[in-house]
Length: 257
Image (cartoon, rainbow, N blue to C red; front, top):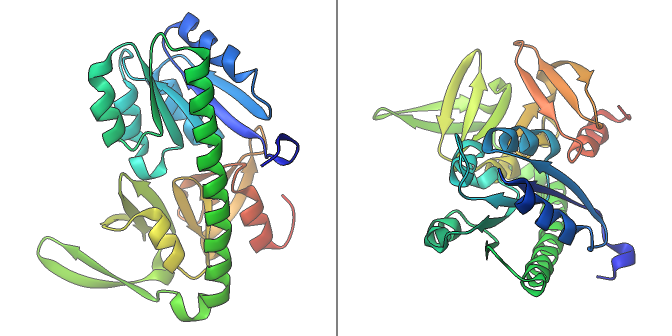
């Protein structure tokens, strides 16, 4: 895809050492169409991922308090952006790829090695974009036949049925989801993306990389910064509307926010 028509890539650089962050940021500035953000530790990284919903993450493995693998565990592998681990220690390579990383940069790395990583990232993001559009189109064409009316919940040796209309919102929890229903939290063994494809798109909408809400349970929206909003649900729960998914909600509401 030519540079002129590429969409902007939001990149987040996370490293507790300022020179290491600066090295990656300087290389990213040579790339066209990249919006750059940075964080100096794992806790700030979690906040930035939830707030910015970046497309691409350069993540140091060894950091105090919360390391790179701890960031993945906190966000959940299924909800992580495309991730490149950056570290001085090659013994972390196996763990990095077990966390579904796109690539692994061993410090010190060359400009050419970084450029190769960026090419892989662009290719993967373009594939994701095309696949996402195809998935959305398929859901729109088949929504009447494929929307679930109830979920089968298995817990503690028992099985029960849960009507999807009772779900207020859904939160990614690692490779599973947490269903927020009537003030209770119910863990369901299904990935967020899979559940999204099965829920009624007239009722449910993805508002964040890690959250889906029931439109009928939204009480109000409160504007924040950078085009984001807090969605206040009927129960009082707050769910972040990221700018990445803002257009999805606007389309369902039939107006701009």
